Image (cartoon, rainbow, N blue to C red; front, side, top):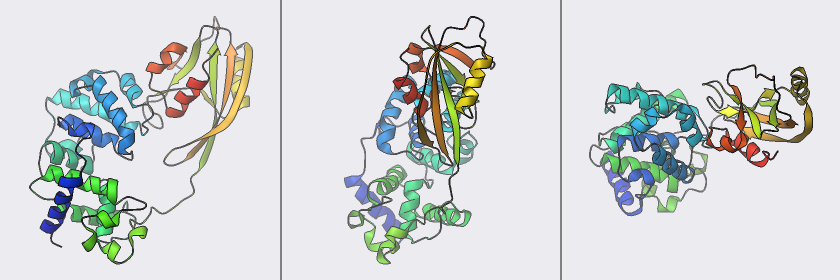
Amino acid sequence: MTPTDFQQQVLDWFDVNGRKDLPWQQDITPYSVWLSETMLQQTQVSTVIPYFNAFIQQFPSIEDLAAAPIDAVLHRWSGLGYYARARNLHKCAQQIVKQGYFPDTLDGLIALPGIGLSTAGAILSIAFKNSHPILDGNVRRVLARFKAISGWTGSTAVNKQLWLISKELTPQLRVADYTQAMMDLGATLCTRSKPACNRCPLNNHCLAKANDLVHLLPTPKPSKTIPVKQLTFLLLKNNHQEIALVKRPPTGIWGGLWSLPEFDSIATALEWCATKHLPIIESKTLAPQRHTFSHYHLDYSTLIINTENPINFVMEAEQTVWYKVNDIGSLGLPAPIKILLQHNTEI
């Protein structure tokens, strides 16, 4: 099957079956493509749609995003995960506004924070109609099966091989439709489990299908034991309807978000309260919960303490403040902390 035949089969399928009504496919701009591609990294379309709509409503232009405080951006991102994406979006917007134009070259795009080769290729192809390959998760799966490429797709050798194939197959004309079509194929037919091979336009030439390898490809990432970390959150509430919240460092897990004071155990949290001479009116400990990150599990307990408003109590860190219960909804909060506060803010 020649590259031209491959492209034609994919485009013919897209014309009939491709998705054309997604929010970011309306009034296409470099900003909307960039935003959607960033949100779609490791996140399903159905999850992204409401986040995209809310984000674009609050920040309708790249200038609006650049001018917004980072707390507002993180709040709108809360629950979507991988918060470095939001921080990079904000940095990118400020850099683009400062330079006065949205880059339309590969080098110009990948020089920006958080924009890799695949996101850059999607922006160039869909927004600028310039022919550039992409290699997101969906396209990796389609190409690995079509060419029966074994080996973990994240390895250097396999990644390089797939990029060469993607480049070879990417057309010069109708590149925006082709790029969307390849993503749609992976998302709707060539899925990770239970792929609909009988409806795939490439099934007669797919080497994985011909050799009964579809269920084995792409080769999974080598498994490893995920470590487990444990900590205790302190939900400290006073009689002024306020909660003690901590602004996390700008980088790392939950970077830049507001969270609860952390301790290595409930006993340590209680000792800290004692050193601060905090009168404990009421306390309780919630059942342990687990939150899974990409590289470790977090098992956490929550100690809830009701205290009087301490007159001379001063938080040690500048980024730790008392927040009114009614105001926490406007903050950028990690998903488990947001849920925790929603269910335990009655004082």
